[in-house]
Length: 169
Image (tube, rainbow, N blue to C red; front, side, top):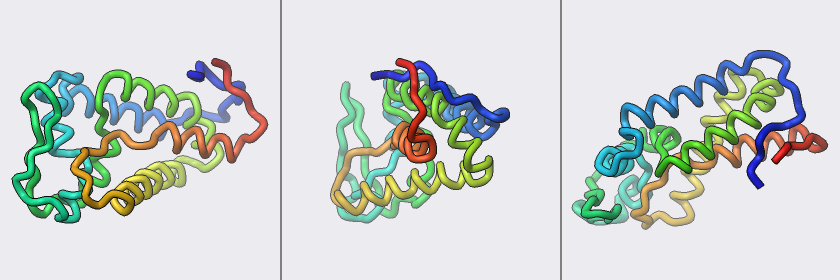
């Protein structure tokens, strides 16, 4: 079921939630080229988290096909920055729309409950935890990880903080 909205009013303007949505939109437009094949593939290869590349468990030069003649070529010594940059990458239109929709519906109330500073720290910490879990569970994976777990961060925290609230679908 896809939530349209919730019945939980916010106390104020959710600036951090809007900032995160805006940042994701800017990345989607200017770095991922609105999902055009080449821009999307290049951004996923450059900024996505590839566990085997990060840990050096895949041979440098390994090609990871992304479709239509496009592939990531793994390089030695991938940057730890990909743990963070991958949080703002998405694999397609439905991916970014779905993630940002869930963040908009549930993130505002979570931000209200935690406060802006704790919310941004929570958001980033959950993203790092998701990346770490992926790397630990599949250290040889060459599949790029992008846009991870925005719905689970927002909806999971929402469910814990507001157990009796409903959302309308």
